Length: 102
Image 1 (cartoon, rainbow, N blue to C red):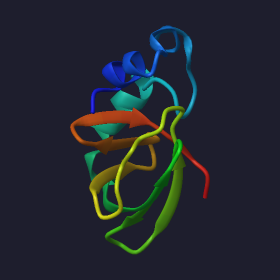
Image 2: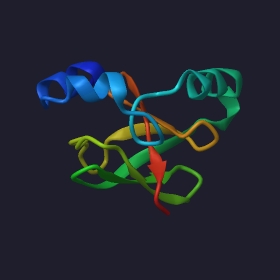
Image 3: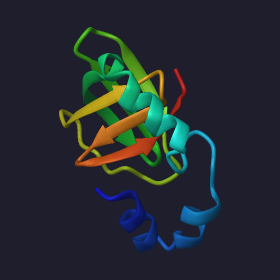
Image 4: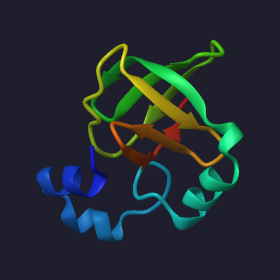
């Protein structure tokens, strides 16, 4: 799932250039933090996904609801990785900016 491709397919190519903030484009600082703190990544499984919301359960037992501005179409049981410090979710080979809702 390449975020740029997903945005273009959804007709949101303009947003790919202009949207910013949690849940939109990955900011360079987010990418730097994720790379500099690899121990903060949390392996997780998707427990629910609807619209732009996705709920993940980390292997440590925490449940987090995340938002991305595009529907992620992830399925329950799908493995992902969440970096709570950087605010990014890795899924299907892409790293996406997300906003923690809970």
